[in-house]
Image (cartoon, rainbow, N blue to C red):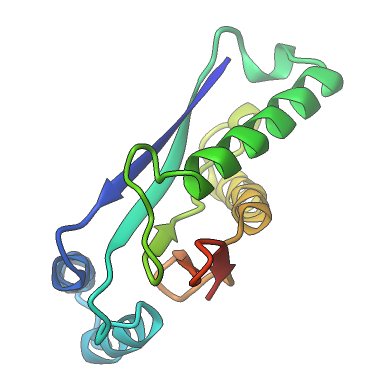
Length: 158
């Protein structure tokens, strides 16, 4: 099994907000203005810093239920260590700057339970627990959680 970490760096915060605007519009939400205002506040829109989406993808060499509990435990601890190194030591080849914002969307099914509503709830909760361990904050109404680099380039939950 391999886990790949990726980071999508947006050119500016306006382009990040525009993506959220398009999503809200596609959902025909009547709260577009409020959601965008809350998001702008959360990502410190007035500051001239960068924003990036961070995520990970797992590629399985065998079915997930064929891994023993010890194997799964080793995989998650190895992943947490590598994710912390990648995010804290250079944003996957993008050097972080104080004030940079990272966004993560901990969403997905629990692999061995199929793709259904209860599987999505359990899988999202597990992914959110991993995101919190890396340094992300509480889950927002848009399904993302956020973190910000402080002056010492330490990732802090927001």
